[in-house]
Image 1 (cartoon, rainbow, N blue to C red):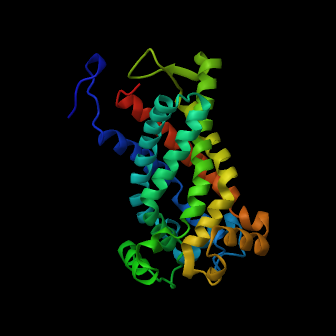
Image 2: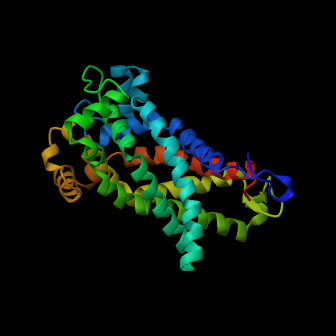
Image 3: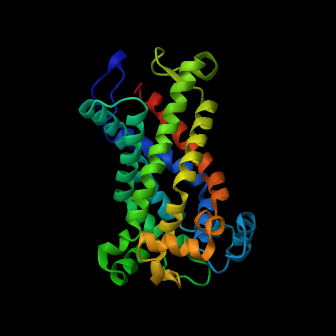
Length: 310
């Protein structure tokens, strides 16, 4: 399958490594799928649940739609997150090398730049799948407009302007992804560097594939990944709310007031304020994103050792 590297270990093919990086994203998203669906319902003020809070919505969805209702849209999310995770982590590694080699930038800044560029690349490549997933997740039992993933693709394409319909809300997504992905990778990389430099014996251990390289212990990896996710989410959350509302488009009764990113931000702020509008569902997002990012970064680090890339 590939050439042999140092110590006789096979060098993984270009397909193998990003595939395992996609597994990291899938593992993370599967764990938090119910929380993700509730977040979408709250962000766009679904009329069935708009009067409820986070935990009351978590309880109300199974009563109204059954326990499988918590996983509505999960199929589309899995189809999306595998290539998304693979592209993001692979692009991050490549952008780091290019920025360091071509621009001569290293350290914290090049992690921030590479993370932002990797996140934007992954979002653009997988955006139509995210659009379909949000439409399916927003539906409530008994009021289905889309019968499944393929039907949603067909409906959006024929009713909302062809391929351009799949990219509604892309601008706030790209604008929000830069700080989110950038600060996520930046925070994780910085915490990892500081931890291994200041307390190598307490926080680190020899890599499984290269004893000369120190890596973080698994529980420390989880902690650093969770902190990275929480900081990144706090910074970019209002743009995430904007993206969801624009993605839902004609599904919402006030869609004509949310045609552009600036219009949507103003409308949400004027109608619902900061806490109940721009940051509605943030507490749930902490619960959702902290374990998600923790699992993603930890799986990513473990796969690097498993594939002998240290």
